[in-house]
Length: 175
Image (cartoon, one colour):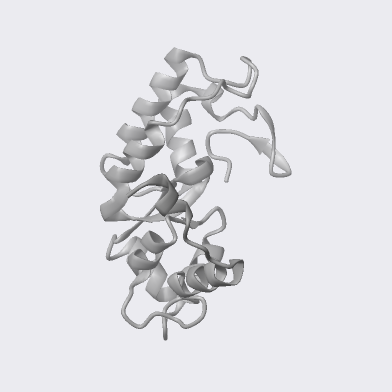
């Protein structure tokens, strides 16, 4: 196939939009897809606010409720909540996590945007990562409980407020 062959196809924007709307189950809710399938079709569902992800997925599945999405995330574990495209929280299909991890790790890293007093030192970073692993080894913790566990294991510096974020000051447990 030549480049000329590839570029000779002609589609109107209305056709492109119609195809995308149908593919994303917006013209008619899918009856044969589950929450993880929808997340796959969409290349991740933005979940910075989880209720928005519940709505985004649930709207696309015939008869689905937010409970179906939450079940897929917390019980069936077919969805995973993690940092995805654009470095923001997304729901991704659990089976696709290795692909996403590989793809996102291939992106060039950017220079940290926060000044040195805001960032952890290498030793502090290592200590916090170890503390997170230790705290979660045998427990499921809320963000606040995890913050307390990290501070307990590393020292009060890990919980100090460092910068304005989301109308509050950011720290390890900021949500």
